[in-house]
Image 1 (cartoon, helix red, strand yellow):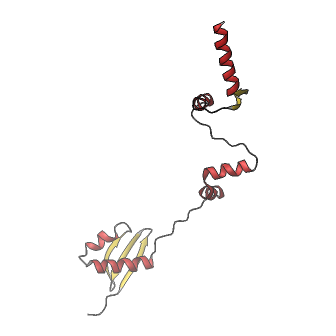
Image 2 (spheres, one colour):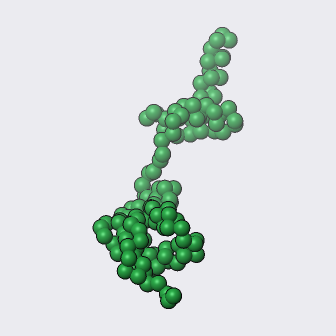
Image 3 (cartoon, helix red, strand yellow):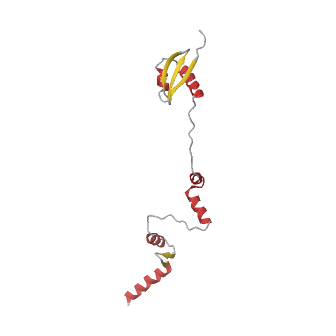
Length: 142
């Protein structure tokens, strides 16, 4: 007996038929390919060969991912890199924290840090706070 000839036909979107020497063998989808061919009681080598023929004739469609310029830039520079870029252009970029500035200042001062800057629209300085506390202690002593 000579070699069998196989023909794969796409009947509709996602539905295929396999013919052997012109005779219908099986109908399948990409998801049911292996299970449908196994029902024919053929060897796994034969199933692998048919699978190879199938993928050569009907390759999986390559997913086309359309990404914006911003999405590509975020992948390349990451969030912090974008913030650094804007800072380099003169922007003031901050990411608000879930802890108040006063809590952060108190914590850092308790660890020995000196803090100077605007806090709630007024100038704040660790040294000024230390002087105010000292003045309060002295007032109570009088």
